[in-house]
Length: 283
Image 1: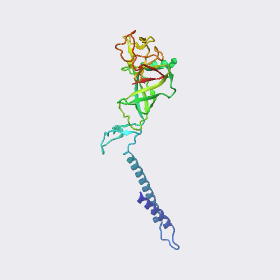
Image 2: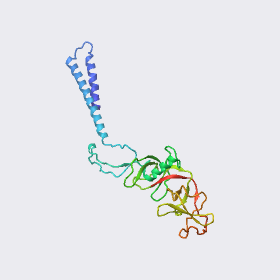
Image 3: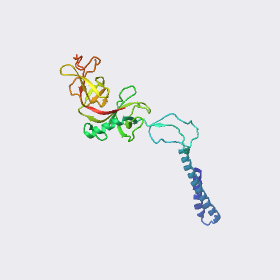
Image 4: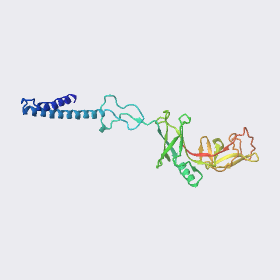
């Protein structure tokens, strides 16, 4: 294209020069003038063809770069340098994973979800507010991930094999501690249960009918068995919504010797303490 532009420049000058006849001279013929105009037109056509070739080459060169539609990290390459790939064959070249932020899919029992919706409707549980649900992630080694995530949506289908619903959350991952395929546990804070007690799991038992019970220290200093409502857990504790009163002491050790009506010897003041608790769904 550069050479052709030079030719055009020469051709553009020639007609003007030949057309200006020196004084008293009639040396330029009409044929030479027409030849100069034809040469100019040919040069212009050559430049246009050259520009079209450059554009075509740039387009073909662009096909050698495959731009990723997302930001992330690429995995192992599925092809080697120099391998032939084409768009219409859908050749897998590599897999790109979005790392920060990263999606964490949790599963919640459909029974837990139904109970939570019923508690929210009845007023037993107060909603955390629109777009306020938070998720806390526990890593594979049991340590707590330092940054909480947010709930994106809950699936509308229940898995018939497991009876669970998938909840998708979005968790910031600036240090890349979370990797695709990693197994984690999550605690979803969907509402606040104001009047609830936390009781250590060791202090709650279930009878043959599945009813939760607890052994407490009565006013007379003897063992008293109470039937309680413990619909869910929170961390290492049971969430007790009914059956216990604030300030009651729950027996958590020596349960093999504890029988209703037997005297109790309190060691180190071990017992349960009341307090508000968040309603959670654990995976």
